Every structure is written in structure tokens, then in C-alpha cells.
Image 1 (cartoon, rainbow, N blue to C red):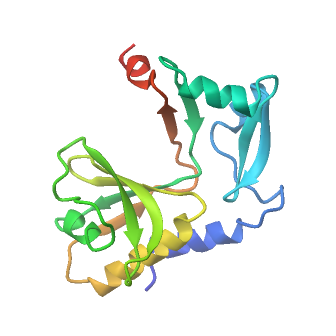
Image 2 (cartoon, one colour):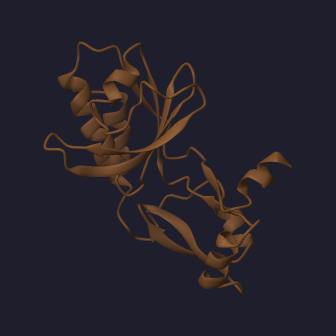
Amino acid sequence: MASAFAAASQRALGRRAFSSDALLKTMLYDLHLERGGKMVPFAGYELPVQYAGIGVLKEHMHCRSPGKSSLFDVSHMGQIKWTGADRAAFLEKCVVGDIQGLGSGEGRLSLITNDAGGILDDTIITNAGDYIYMVVNGACKITDMAYLEKMMAENSDMDVQMNYLGDDATLVALQGDGAKTALRS
């Protein structure tokens, strides 16, 4: 089945070689370099693994400390927007979570499963009101979306559309005990 996703994924797969000249860069790449980020290849992107003068353990402990939080560039993750009247019912055929029961603005961690019930990937799914927003892992996004397209073809009677937001979509995650306080500020 030809689709916009298939064409985009073919272009992305062509860029997925792990040589440094073929790696994608997030929109925050220059900021990472300015802050002393040690860049490494991951999931087809050049991403920071640590920052100069700080160290992985200190960064980890900061994020886990009471009242503290850390901001992560997770733009390498796959961001999908689901539309159509049957979007929630369709996703419940692909994941283990109760998607139809999500209230507007609510999110849920779930698992994408194959036909035998095996786990393909974990995912975060949010009811954004007039669409469902799904985030899949960067290293699995191409295979996840191919599987989801296969499921769409097998359920072609359902009104559902998948829109991959693209390799240049930016996504950050604020994590840690102090995240709620930081967001209220």
C-alpha cells in the first residue's frame, strides 16, 4: 500500500546509516553543542549522552533529587497524530491500554503488541481532544509505523488516519520530582 508514511519512511531509512555524516540532528543540536554535549549516534540521530564538566551520575542524581527536574531532548522519538472517528477503537486493536476511556488531555503508557500478543514497543498515548497523540521509541519508530500501517490495511473498514509528524518534529520531556512545580512557574 503506497502512502505518505511509506514514502517518508523510505527516505528516513535511506538516512539511517550510522556513519556520522548520515546522522539526523534535532532542532536543539546547536544548543547541545553550546552546552558541552558529548554527541553520539542513537536511533539514526546525533544525540547528547552527557555534558562536559557534569558527568552522567551527577546528571542522573539531579533529575532524581527531591524538588529537581531535568529537560531531555527526545526529538528522535516517533510522534504520530491519529484522526478519524474510529481512532481510539483502532488503537485498542494494536495496544493493551484502554484508549477509548481516556478523557481529553489524559495520557497513558501502553504496549504495542503483535498478532500473538508479543510486545513490539512501549508507547505513550494521549487523548488530545480532536485527535490522539502517540509517541513511540526512536529506535523502533520505522518498524512500529509499518506494523500500524499493516493493521490499518487489515482494518480498512475503520475510519482512522495516521499522520507521522516527521523526523524534524521537536519533542522535549521534563522529568523529575520538580517537573510539576517547574511547569506551574
